[in-house]
Image (cartoon, rainbow, N blue to C red; front, side, top):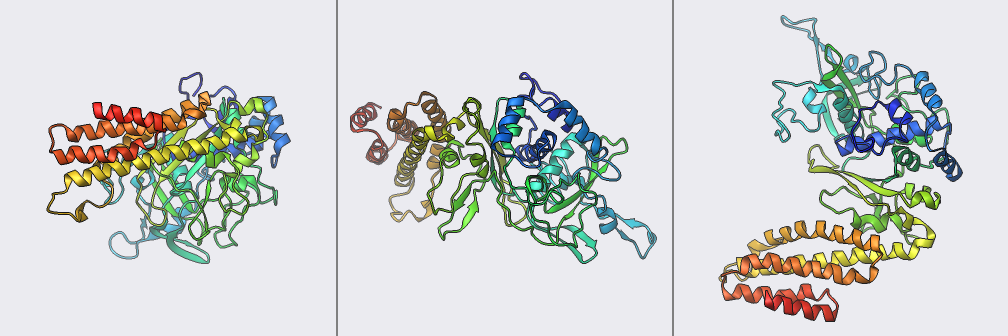
Length: 515
C-alpha cells in the first residue's frame, strides 16, 4: 500500500520503492508470509551483505532505502529467472516435471500419445475445490477448470511451497534414484509465524532479515540464483546461510502451465521436491514452546486466538534451561536504535491446518499489533513483564466466565431426570458464545492498557468485562424462565465476580441484583 492506496508491483519495484510503500497487501496471509521471506533474501542481496549483524542493520536503516542501482544490477544479473512462465527457468518452479511425470500411451487408438499427468488447476488454488472436495469460496470444479490469473497463481505457488500438504501428491515423479508420489509437509504447514513491522516496507524488510550465520557462500543461494536445477538424487541440502534458510526449504516441486496468452495458469504439476524430509533448521520467525514431556515444538496456528495472548512470549527472554524461546528474529533486533523500535510492531501470519495429513484447512489469518517492540529493550523489562500479568489476568477471567456459563447451561438445559448430565459434557453453546464475545473485547482493552500503561487497572478491566458479558448472556435465558434457572445464574455469578477486587466485587454484586 502506498499512501493508503493499493498499487501493483513486481519484486524489483517492491525493493526499489520499499521506502515509499507502507505495507504489503497480498490478500492471502500465507502467500504474504512467504513473500516476506523472499523479500528478506532479496533485501540482503541488494544491500551488498552476505550476512547481517547489528551494525549492518543499523547502517541499512540509516540509509532509509535500498540503492536503486544495486537493485537494478541484481535483477539484471538474473534476467529471465524471475518470470513466472519463463520457458527455461520459471521462478520458484521445477521445469522438468512433465518429462518426469507424463507417460506415453502404449495401447489403443491413442497409442504413442502423451498422457499428461498434471494435477489440475483446482489443486493449485488453495481457495478452490479440487477432485471431490467441497466448494467453499466459489463454484469451481475440475469439470470446468477456470484459469488462475498470473499474480494470483504466484501467491498460490508460494503457499504450496511453504504450506503444502504431505502424503501422495498425484502421479509418480520419476528421477534417477527415486520414483514416488509422496511429499513431506511444507515447512510452515499448520504454524504461526511472527515478523517485525516498521513504518515502511523498507523498515519491515531490514528488520526481518535474520542474523543467520553464513556457513558456505557458494551454497547459500536462492533457487533462482543456482546455476543448475536441484538434483533430488544428491545429499539433502542443509542451511548454508540466511538466503538458503529463507528460500530453500520447500518440500514440494511445482510447475505452472500458462494459458495461450501467458497471462494466467491453466494447469499445474505438483510433486515431491526431495525424496525425504530436509534436515531440521531453526526458523527465526517461529515461537518455540515446550511440551509436557520436555520436547520443543513450534507454536501451531489457531484461528480466533488473539495475538496479544502470545505477546509476552515474543518479547520476554525465556528462563535459563527452558526449551521455550521467543523467535530468533526478536533476539536479532533487540539492539536496533530506540528511535526505530518506538515504531515497530509485530505481524502474525497463521494458517490453521492439519500438519500430519492432507486436508484439515480451518482458516488463515493475519494479525498486527501497535508499535510495542520498544518493550524488547532491557530498560523496558518491567513494562514487558507487566504484559504477562495482563495476559494472565485476561485468561483467568475468560476461564471463570466460560466455566460459569457452562455450569448455568448444564443446570438449566438438562432435565432434572438426568442428573448425570452425560450428554451435556464439554463446552456448551453458551460457553462458545461467551468466548467469541469476550476475546475481541479483551484484546481492545489490552491494547488500551498498554497504550496508557495503566497497569494498575488490569484486574478491574478484565473482571468487569467478564461480569458484564456473564450478565448479558445469562439475561437471555433468565427472562420468564423457571426459578431454578434464576437460582443457577445467581449462584454461579459469584465465580465470575470473584475476579474483581473486593470493593469492585461488591459493586458488581449490587449491579447483578439490580439486573
